Structure formats: C-alpha cells, structure tokens
Image 1: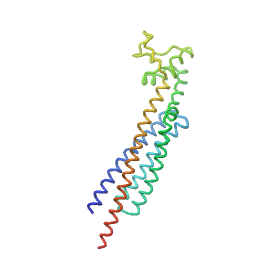
Image 2: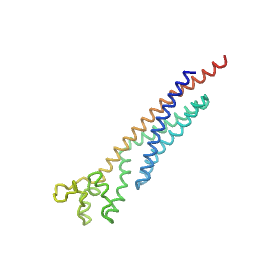
Image 3: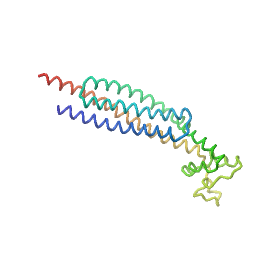
Image 4: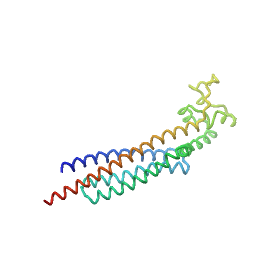
Length: 220
C-alpha cells in the first residue's frame, strides 16, 4: 500500500506540473486572440495554443480523479486518452514549429491595421515604435511617401535634432521577429508539457499495476 501511495504522489506532482503548463498555454492563446486584430491564420494559431492547453487540462483532471479513486479501469482509460492527446499535441506543435516563420508573419499582420490608423490618426504607431525602436511599417520612407515627416518616436531618445538618430528599421520586421521569438518559447513549453505527459503515462501504468497488485493481495 505504501508503494501505491508513493506512486500516487508522483502522479499528483506531474498532474500539477501539467496543469500549470496547460494554464500558461491557454492564457497565452487567449491573450493573443483578444489583444490583437488577427487574420484567419493568426486566429488559428492562437486557438491552437488554447486547444493544446485545454486538451492537457481535461485529460490531466481525469488522471487526477483516477489516481484518487485508485480505479484500474479509469486509470487504463486515462492512459489511452492521454496517449491520444499526446499524439494530437505533437502533430499540432510539429506544424507550429515547421511553419514558425509563416505563423510569425501572420501574427504580425496585426500591425497593418495600426499603420492604417496611423495614416488617419497620427500617433497610433507610437507604441510599436517606442517598444521595438523602429520607424514606419517598413522604413521611415513610409512616412515620406505619405507626405509626412517621421515623428519623434522614429528617432533615438526622441532627439530629432540629429539626422543620424533616425531609426531605419521598419516595425513590421521587428514585430515578426518578436512573434517568432515568442512562439519559439511557447513551442518549447508545449514540448516540455508533452514530455511530462509521457512521463505521467509511464507512471500511471506503474500505478495501475500497483493498484491491481494491492487488490489481489486483499483477497488473501
């Protein structure tokens, strides 16, 4: 019985770790979907992270209940569904990793709406230009072709007195790089989650055997 209790503690610990990672993925996906004006691929990407986290959260909750009840049938069913979820998660994260640049490019499309707003209402791009130390959509030339001078946010330290302070990097490139870096971090988190889930499936098999052995010993 002590062996079963020890294995249960490991299962609970892995359940907690998987739950935390799942909540992080869900929060990230919701944040992206709510905070930015995304195109169709951008929305699919955001919902993919939500789906990855939600699938893990549901199956891990089932695993927790199975371990708590010490039910062999529930534990075996949990292991089967966990393996199916792992396969699905791996397929999704494989697409996210192999299409990393495409994903970043589509997420960065949210900047296009801000640039259009900048043309109608000067100052809309200030957040991006201050954040990424960039200027215009593609370069400062974007302002000039629209018969406007680059604003203060296009100059280092907002100092327009020296022409060499003008920032020549466009915000679109910087925003894409930002998304590429961010998605890479969360793709690694997904892989870590899958790793914990694989370990959880192995430990759950051990728990299942331990519960079965305890049940057999109780008959004698």
